[in-house]
Image (cartoon, rainbow, N blue to C red; front, top):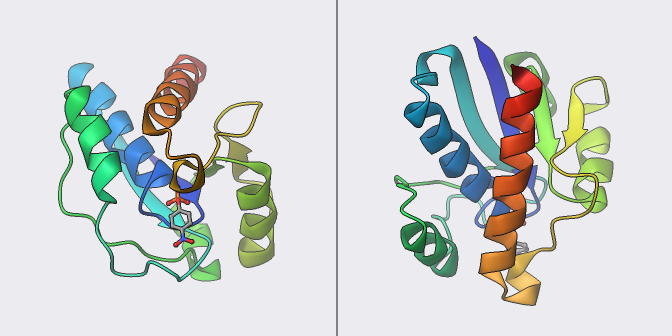
Length: 142
Ligand code: 4NP
């Protein structure tokens, strides 16, 4: 079992999008049983909130199913529960290191930052970047 936690700032846009895209790719490959996929945020700002509406819309446009989501903040205690914590941008990575106090399991989804669609309002670009990162991740996990 490989346990992966995707991490962004608010846990209502990028990291839950990554969670649902990854789950769908694993379903297509019949690999879901071998993975545990979750997502968290580095801030408590959105705690308890569902996936942001424009993020739902872009997933629907690309036929990626999603379920009810409740945003939650990454905690130091999560360290033992996952094999990888995958951040979206350098600011996420810095805050993940502060929270987890250990960088051995921390990775970035792409070599460059996945811009926050909460600010850019460009959910399609975020979707494309996240999908590219997940395709790379699946290749590297082979
Ligand atoms: P995310 O986007 O990190 O991709 O979930 C954000 C969502 C909410 C906020 C910031 C970023 N916020 O400040 O509430």
